[in-house]
Length: 73
Image 1: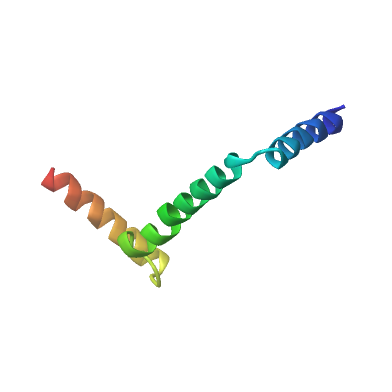
Image 2: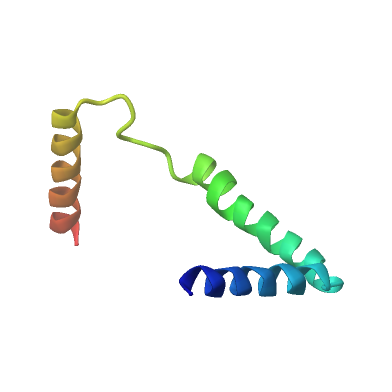
């Protein structure tokens, strides 16, 4: 019964997507925006400060950052 329900839901969305005209273009725009937001922006604006460090170095860095930010606020 559960398998039948999942199959009907799957085919509902597949048939709906096949019959779209302008919706496919809108989905493409949405996917391009998501790619830009999560991949491109992460590369340039969110550097990985913990890359290449050991567990102890990571713990020390995070604790120092938390303490320094708590003091400056």
